[in-house]
Image (spheres, rainbow, N blue to C red):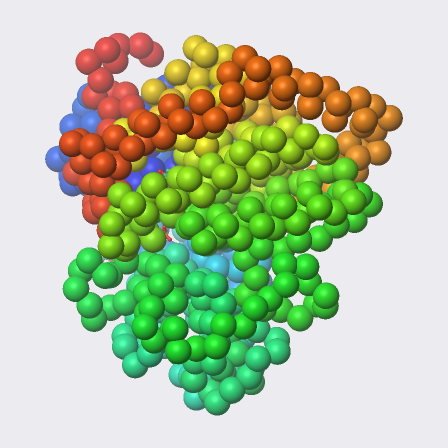
Length: 572
Ligand code: COA
Ligand code: THG
């Protein structure tokens, strides 16, 4: 079929559906929902058999949905309607939630239902539920709906609120007043809940250091206490605030009442540098000695001669300081009597490369970019040159740009089946990229494929990635069971009869490669190009980063996605 993905943005859900539909053999094109006339134009050009809308903020025009069937993917159970589905599900502490595929009609989200799936609502942020449970359920819903459409005889069910099985209902847009934190009354669980219901967007509007700010990235704290509402500590980028029954950490904030150039989401201590400096820095060991909860981005543990490093960096973005801490943690792992070091990344993202928001906020974004890329390169080099044990990158969540190549630094790379990779830099203003990608990518997929991947700038699914050798293996589970599977795999490697041979082979291969072309030469050549991106005459990278960080709305769909707008587009 010819499928048009009509969407507000090419976000993680849209990318996953793009991957699934392409894998199923459909001709897929993408149009951003910029305005009605652009949508009409796209439909006229592509002549889709079906329009798929995974992420829309506006109504599809009547002439479009009357002439073309449109599948809306709504992140709610049957009967749930409105623009804040997941926000309400979290605020109302729903136990089960779901995804519904309905056909667009005049009344928003009230059209006939083609398919739906439910899942247990995990205690996590809105965006985490969206990137995991909602995305996996949407994929299953999509395949079921397409099967029914193909079968021909299926009649979609009209929404009927008199049916006792219909639990959902219309809910309006969540207002800030619906989740205002009362620091003198709300306990820690209530604070966490409210922040999670609004994380990643729009955030909970509260106040910090006496100034209005949106809060994100909240973590529980089981030890520290203080007078409710007072800021009592800082750790790395986060600040700790006392509640009536304990305290919570706030990792990221966006200041509200400042000039536009300061209104971006940043680590809390970075957004309020002067004020945060006055708080006591409370250190934490990377190796938990108890089950007490606290803010800890990097976690180390080991079992049966395997080391596990998790790095729960918000949005997968890695600033200079975060890279330095990760490098220290990696070196610690390599100092331990372990045979395999597993790099688990974070729950939602393995890594998305350098921290574009922190770079944007720096006095000199060019200098900060330079420091950031070097800090990531230092980690990549340390992993590549680890010659006395084996390394495994295990991707629970997506990776993009430098984050993908950092994963390739490990000896083996495995991913959860639902993972989507973006192994390219060009979308960020023609960034050349580093992370030793010119060494790591061709040796896995060959020079031609490497060129294709970096030029096409398309997402690829874990299955396709494994097919071309970019990954070694796909593990088909959900995010929650993935780590258990990885533990089996890592222990198998550690206990393998040939373990010593594998390490010796790896060491020998590295020496051969080094003799052919020293690792530092790859880095030098990549960084020469990056220096041009950062300091050269062409400001594309700085412009693209600005647009990305400030979420400047798209004015058109890029041609690598809008196949129907390409001059060469005449294939099926
Ligand atoms: N630095 C800072 N923030 C980043 C980031 C980075 N490198 N990568 C992703 N993010 C943020 C996004 O801004 C977004 O923020 P939000 O909290 O305001 O929503 C969030 O992470 C990702 O949201 P989501 O909608 O799930 O992402 P996506 O699936 O649409 O996009 C990527 C995934 C990787 C394709 C996209 O985020 C991207 O292009 N990132 C930039 C990658 C890059 O160029 N890195 C620098 C080069 S090393
Ligand atoms: N039929 C048609 N178009 C659609 C849907 C449909 N477009 C997408 C929509 N379903 C699913 N998403 C939304 C998006 C917004 C709203 C409801 C469902 C909504 N928005 C408020 C408004 O427009 O006034 C304000 C929201 C805001 O400001 O964010 O109610 O079934 N044809």
